[in-house]
Image 1 (cartoon, helix red, strand yellow):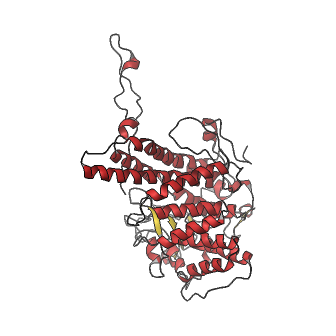
Image 2 (cartoon, helix red, strand yellow; image 1 turned 90 degrees about the vertical axis):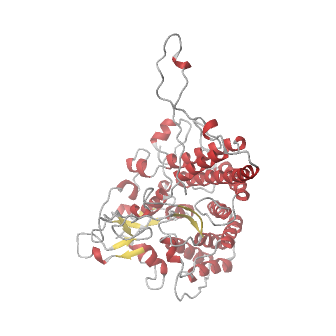
Image 3 (cartoon, helix red, strand yellow; image 1 turned 60 degrees about the vertical axis):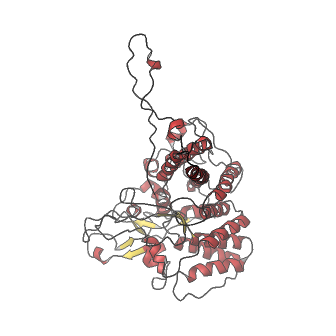
Length: 481
């Protein structure tokens, strides 16, 4: 995906006036206004690419891993406040690593600028063929911008709200570019706007999966399913997850490992392409290596709880996600266990730790549908979904039956833990299900950090102090005042 970005340069230097000319009359020469920057449909596409370029799932992946029970401390530890749930609005580690405002409102602003300009954007040329192509592109860009706006607002909701109660606070839903301050709105109103954006985007986007580095109709279905699950709108969750499943089948036993080495795009309707010049997903957990014999610093290693949850012989996810590295044995390292889900190429090579970011996968849709079916009383359908997923993950798997809804829900949540590890879901899954974070004693940095009780206010992040000071209308989350 192209990474071109428009720079909006606000004038900082004014020419010194001479004679009777006033300083304020001097025209700015280094400012590109929206009427120029987004003048043509092609310009609007570059603006859309700029919105994609700002998008990332690295922060949610690291947050869900370290705040929950997916990792334990390895060779280097500098995240005590967040890993031990001691953070607050002024916490430096939280401010520097887990502030969603800058990331997602930047994407939203870029999407809104495209949406504002598209109706009046002109064709690149006057030829009939080029004009027709521009009109088709105009429609697609509107769908992409609406999708990016909805996606980013949902991520803000997961960070700072994550409530299915309509009267609870969500965030400010931005539908136009603005520098004004806005208060938070309730979940019901916020989600009405978000769902409207997704519904409007879907018919404008391609159904083909030839380019999953940009939004597709199936990606919208996936987002609609995810949103419905969080809101406990289970019938909608079933409908939209089924749409995704019908469009994008599960990876086979043979193809699944290739997802994580980017050999194939199985299960994906939307991914974020990463290169050596953009970001290294694997470096969230381990630094790059000087050579094959000098493996980089390991910041986080797999929790024993997660490591031990797999059938290490038959479950193909284990070898795709982890590695027990004999090169680390006998030295000063605390463990030989590595998270290799985003390992990229070999130690010491240029693309080490480089892997595309998988925004959503068919496996998640099976688990969404299974949970929604179980909550709707369709235990047979839910079990069928769970068994179908396991059958393409575990060699020789035998389908299971479940006596009660509670047993089935427990199994589905365990499968989400194993299937979606390091994909940015675990902490928020525990919050939306009102479950605790429960680490094994060996995984916790200290006794106080072994359990975060269900319902604890720290399942929601605080609104950071800079945002509170910049926006006097914004409301802080409970527990942080």
